[in-house]
Image 1 (cartoon, rainbow, N blue to C red):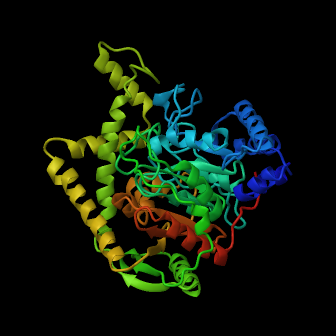
Image 2: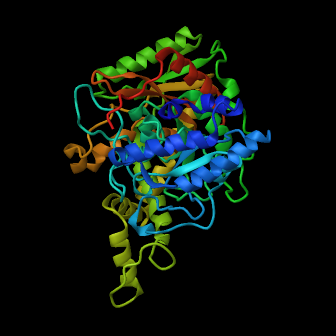
Image 3: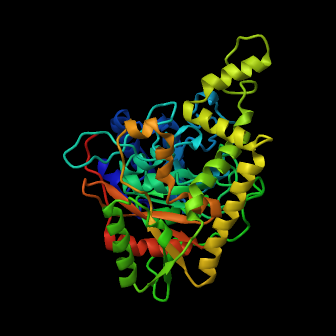
Length: 494
């Protein structure tokens, strides 16, 4: 049965349609894989086998009746940020203890409408705040990859670490994820998977727990580029319940794969050549340029001059929005409540102190500070002006004829769980987002595709950045890199 979990979404779709396998068989194989591996990886915080098998039986009936949806019978993992009807939805935070919503997020509803099967909810950094999946109330997720000749446990990246780990370890066919500053692309790079952050507004945010509302965007993490294209087609939609979602047709992204890159211009931003960048990252970047050139694209040097301000501006804007969004968690209506004290204000304080983890508390305090009367103009307003300049940099480059931009996805491969240097200095941890935050600040689409292994045998990714709502260009370009680089799977130890 474990052979079934090796199938990509595209391969499983073909076998299900041909009635070579059933959705129940496929789902049972994944449930078994989760039971065998989750104690080692901690990718799932809730598994829903009965629900999954019920959905799989319904899929088999629709396939038999010739009424199969685009994802009929495909078992997926869902990041714990997406509301799932009557199923654990806590953003991996203690403050949402025992919360089970009586509604479904638009993104997951779209997947169920297309016939997908829910295996369970995936671990993540608390409220999506983190770059290593170590801030979760349920403990860190373990990366299925290990360095050559080493048993050291590595992070899968964050915040969508459970999604990336589960996909890489074949504990789901694909997974939903979200990206506020790199939370899809960084874990995808760390685990040898493909992750795309679509254009802001491409997927509805309704029913997805908010971190920073002007930056958050849902997207898939998948085994390969084709599977990511299939998933995004189902996830994306306009939504009356989310006024930031855009009313544009959702293309058949899969149809873009294999299209010629001839005549395309790929920009290489000089500002991404960071001081102290590891030689192997630089080497991989040059290899990516060579692959795209061989595929017919023209490589051109470009400048994005405000890149150096992106990370500090992001860590003002995102915490500011978080401090506002997280004010709603007060212990009154749902989730954790810590009683005691003389009045309701003290109950708020006790609940929030116990309910939020240290990283979330840190960002709430930063956000509250930069929004306060004496500092709003000096910090928040200035960061928003910088954001406008970052967006303008990209607009000017694209207006000059560049079709997509190629950069590294991360400044390194996966690091150890509990890395003392990173734990002692939050700013060093934030630097993991250095190549990804500009994309969120400008609202653009970005994809991470596996491109090679470092000298420790760990996966590294390349990032492609595109024009608004031109995900098709990213998919066909990423597919060319994937064809040249091949696919990467961790050696099983769990």
